[in-house]
Amino acid sequence: MTATTRSATLADLTTLAVGGPVRELVETDTEQEFIDAIRAADTDGTPLLVIGGGSNLLVDDEGFDGVVVRDTRQGFTVPDHSACAGVTLTVPAGTRWDDVVEHCAGVRLKGIEALSGIPGSTGATPVQNVGAYGQEVAETIATVRVWDRERSRVRTLPLVDLTFGYRTSLLKQSMLTDPQDPATPWFPTPRYVVLDVTFQLRVAQLSEPIRYAELARTLDIAVGERAPLPEVRAAVLGLRARKGMVLDPADPDTRSAGSFFTNPVLTEAEAAALPEDAPRFPAGEGLVKTSAAWLIEQSGFGKGYGLPGPAALSTKHTLALTNRGGASAADLLTLARTVRDGVAERFGITLVPEPVLVGTAL
Image 1 (cartoon, helix red, strand yellow):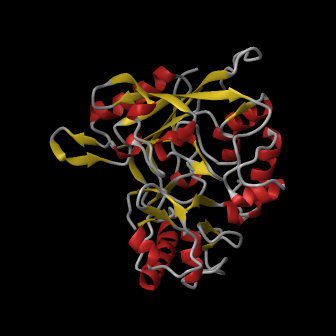
Image 2 (tube, rainbow, N blue to C red):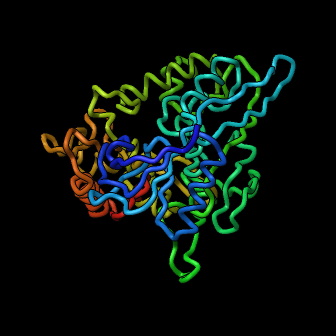
């Protein structure tokens, strides 16, 4: 097959279901087609947006006046691992992430079981260092192959060079600059575009130690204990579904970009200024992470805030901003600003959006 070009709107391509038309959408099903489409846009100086599942995007209602490239590659090869303790698994960027997790949990490969139910593509996971329920994808990544737009070549980046942090990485931070104006970044697609991700997983019947208290309670085990991989996956899917974090066309609470704000990481002094009952989690030397959802709720924004409007907080989880039907990007941004400003006024903490904002800003 060859790359296909068609007209589309970003509302058709994102889980938030908002965003205007794109000048050109190119869908590719081979690595070479994917690279060629990116290189052609860069050669022509055309604005470029590379997407996978569209689960972490909020695009302006005016759309995107450039080329949108979508990697549609799916599938992966699982080697025979019956006689070895570890398995190296390489997955094309376009592959649906939850398909990878489901397969690994089913064939006794541990390390990503708590990341079940997260929407989007595999290529997006290292960019954001996706994490949930006590696991982060950085814990199992060995290398990431990328197309380096600045050098116009394929490169393999090892774990040590990826500089993973909380919801960030080298891949997210490395912007390509306009050669005519080096001070100007070419946004929104960064310098490195993921081609495939190689994971190092271990063969086991039981999961990694469960670090997240809510998940441990669901599994009826103590924090630090292990559970069978399929049971962990089922428990995580159940928890995410109850929070509206598993895509369901019939449930408007899932018409979102997942958690809209990251959990703030504070200095110890900043954390000490919070009320005694505020959640606190170690986040490295001298740093404390608190809960964005708790801050939002304590600032007066409960579940369903914004209803009956077209944009509202999820009725299941205050971290998700949802399109209740017919919402525009402007509606969602107005809601996000209201929540952000309310938290800043109450606690002096400015929440940071997790989705990539295209053509607009918070």
